[in-house]
Amino acid sequence: MGRNPIILLCCMSLLSSVTVADWNILNQKTKNGLKITLKNYCESWRMNVELHNIREFKVVPEECIGYIKKYVTSTQYDVDSELAMEECTVYLSTSCDFKKDGRDAWIFDIDDTLLSNVPYYKKHNYGGENLNLTSLEEWMSQGKAPALEHSLRLFNEIKARGLQIILVSSRKEHIRSATINNLVNVGYHGWTSLILRGPEDELKSVQAYKANVRNQLIKNSGYRIWGVVGDQYSSIEGLPAAKRTFKLPNPMYYVS
Image 1 (cartoon, helix red, strand yellow):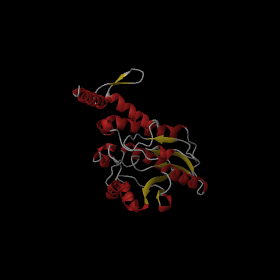
Image 2 (tube, rainbow, N blue to C red):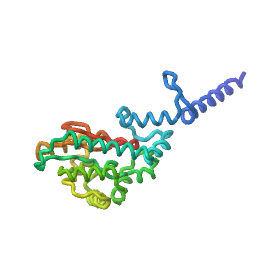
Image 3 (cartoon, rainbow, N blue to C red):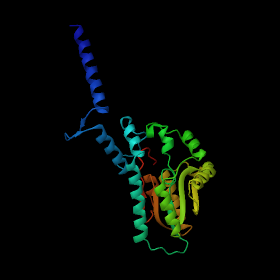
Image 4 (tube, one colour):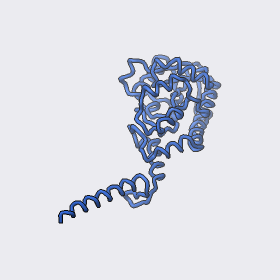
């Protein structure tokens, strides 16, 4: 009789181990009984990040790190980014009545919008590790981020149309020189303003900071902001809003 509790505990432990293994590796079912694979789950997770249903996540789920790696280094990521930029071009060509008085403006974010931080995240499990801000800023200070080619083409097209290009980033002021050098070295030049986060902005959320910048640009400088491009919802949401917003894919991290 004394052995029964031990046997029972061993069986429970075994069942628990199988359950964990099933979640990480084997097929699962939804609450409605639909059979899914790990790939289905990770694709759904990524899609719901882009739809802004999943918010405030700190790391990519461990079981999805390999999937996110494949996505951000894939042709699909390139195609998704290219189509987003092509939609900007369609909008510029069909829906914008520019006044051409020096007040027509367009806003770009920088990180994973103009410059790619994928090389940094490659060394940090593609978002599978908690963000180390010091480490990330050291990477930014090196000025080695490559251009996102589709964004560079859009940047040059908008510049050719005579719009004022304003770069609004949550990067801090002490990285200004490195940021300018990085942008110029990969082909970006001719923007009107580069606005970075000062000490007075550090207690604000990124969304509040960027909305406040837009407010100042509209009220104090008289700009008409025809569009904003960013990889985070915090770059494009909040009031006052641009006439149109465009989001690039980024399942590696979330900035609120």
